[in-house]
Image (cartoon, rainbow, N blue to C red; front, top):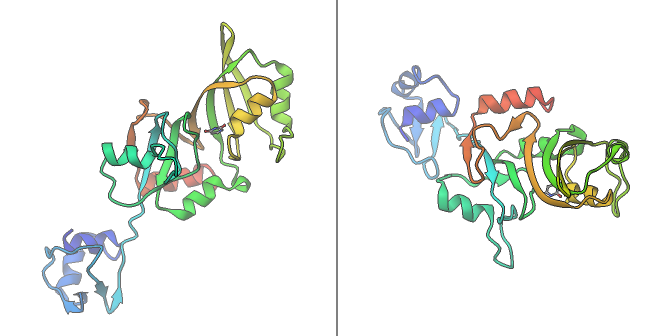
Length: 242
Ligand code: URA
């Protein structure tokens, strides 16, 4: 990356003002004053200083990914199950190490935020932040009004009691129904366990929304799109996790 771009990306000045700053001799690369604003710098190795202070790129990256079935969200697996990282390496060129915000089961498809921003991860996942996660599920049978109420009230599963959730029936298809479920927490296999608890086993599961992020633009499993810091800021405001 060119030195002037680095200075601008680090938020020190605008791109227009970066050359002036460099010309003025206030910028050092590896302890030497650098006056060439087209100088190529390596953001991993070179030490860039402005007024004697090292400047680092924040370089937070964000992606929305439509996870395909057949991959686990864990980064490593002793049984060599394919991970989403294997998938991403094969199909995309993400240059920084990103992690998934939350987990989806191997057979679950759908929306995953990928990032190296720990603060965002914490805020999206922490139950007290109450960010909604919406799922589309195909289940055996047809849940009734009583089941809907049990979701709303919260239900006692083996290890914990769920907080209020929503269940909506979309359509019935033979012995199965399509339903949507909204939860604000994310315990392991939570949706499947809640559905089994009311007697309607999940046979297909896809996450379709996390807060205000949806699968718009990444409708096909395996699709990925990068999102900018501005969109993340908007997301945080809209979901009240600022
Ligand atoms: N709930 C589940 O049961 N599985 C998932 O993958 C996500 C939520």
